[in-house]
Length: 304
Image (cartoon, rainbow, N blue to C red; front, top):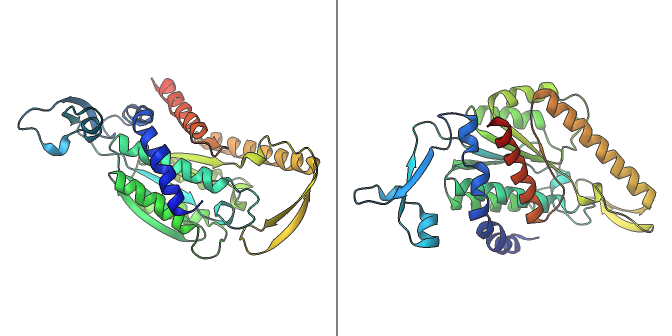
């Protein structure tokens, strides 16, 4: 999927449908986690002469024509950052075996980004592989969200895919982001660092931030059924060398079992550090929305 196609896709699906649907996922939730340090949104009241025009609720004005003013509570704003894995297994290239991962990544970024717009929260980006490929400080507004999406899509076509340096990006975001910011770490977690005990790596970042890992899985890794054997041309994780593999139903089942074991391994270590995580394994916007919504609704029930 190219940049122009995704712009059109985003405008007709993510942007318009999430303006109403995703507001309730995040608003109030931050307030319940960090009393007095949330998003600063308190209430809405009708506009009266003398009110600051900068406080007008533009979404309500556009949709209904009603002039309403946003009241804000005192306290620091919570900023959001999308920490996006751009290593080889998450980049687009020809003959990519797990080809849905970049699409799932982009849908997640779009939903989270426009959710931030809906509750007037600044959002930023840190895209990485073995280095920091792009860092955008958290800013308000739809323009910031669009810039994030465009930068992620642009990074797909810059340079050769390579492995990720997870300790480096964690050190970087620990330095750049303030305490109690919300950090969405979007990755397939296929890096070797996540194959062993990575609890100590997560503890500093989990202590400082509301850190939410989003595990991206291709639908093939979950429940795709292969009725017969097939020859498939695939490229390596760097997209440079192609080879043909003979994929049988039994071999696919073994791949799926290995993926399930890896997911259990991740789950155990997340719980060890006290982190809740999200698994996205479908490129469908509706499916991703349901998973994200369920996650935050579950958080709300636990903390109320």
